[in-house]
Image (cartoon, rainbow, N blue to C red; front, side, top):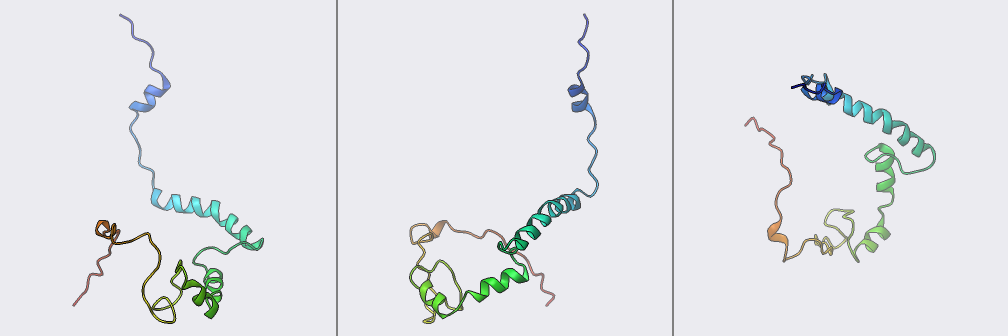
Length: 117
């Protein structure tokens, strides 16, 4: 009985896997190398600055004024100030969470602050 020759794919499947050194560092570096020039180009062309950057924060807070807060009272898509509006109603008119589905909500994440006291 003759056996068929082993294919290159079969050899790869049998080969031991070697760990990739510093993979947890390589992925963010690769992403930064790819996205960084795109973000810089977008900012240079007048597009929105990178989220969380000083320019983004300045642009987002600059648009929150009295007119914005009063307009926001109608549907409350944003929470621009403490208490939501000037009346501090602390109640959103959005309908995504309501009496019918609130029981199904749960924590998505948490972090233990490890108090030393």
